[in-house]
Length: 293
Image (tube, rainbow, N blue to C red; front, top):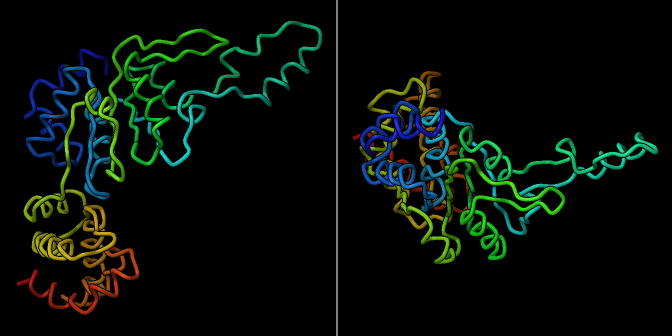
């Protein structure tokens, strides 16, 4: 889709919510409004929330509703410009120089340029959505580099000159809030906090994204997960884990394990930490029985 098509899709927050639902992502009114405003205002969208609430999945769904490829830049401690912007393929350059002999060769031709996510999006902004995932895991120096990129949507390559986006790219940033982001970066974005859904919405998500899971199972899983998340766990289960738990328990039940035994046996797809498992195990039977009631 082109820029006009994006505007056609984002005619209202309600239309955005409908398109996201068609991509199997249930967005509430506040999230669909934030997505709508980010697209129409041409501003980056900053999604914050605990791990597992669906921030990355939201970015995937937004790219899908716009009919664009998602270019993902996964941040980590120590990430630098070369991993985000571009690199020269030095080995290929040296090989080309050897083959050229005495003939002239432009070693800064496109064939020697390795485009990283930011440059990829600049080259085709109407075809791609940029996801800067877990920006809070990077350092302040990289955050400053990203802020400069978001200010002008251009990259200066000393050997080639400046490459600018022909249209305004759509950019989504996610953060688990392991550290505070710079105020300058926050001010540039449309902001939205994604929290864990309530039991009713989570049951709807499970039914939408799981396989052949009965509504009663989805509701029981959603209710149990709500109780489990309220415990002081090191790694509370995310929505994806809830979907997996519903699927796994259903598979075990069809294989002969009765409820609530199927839920207990499938707990390894929900809880992914040994201490959390030890903490929740004594209560699990009661929690599941309460959720099934």
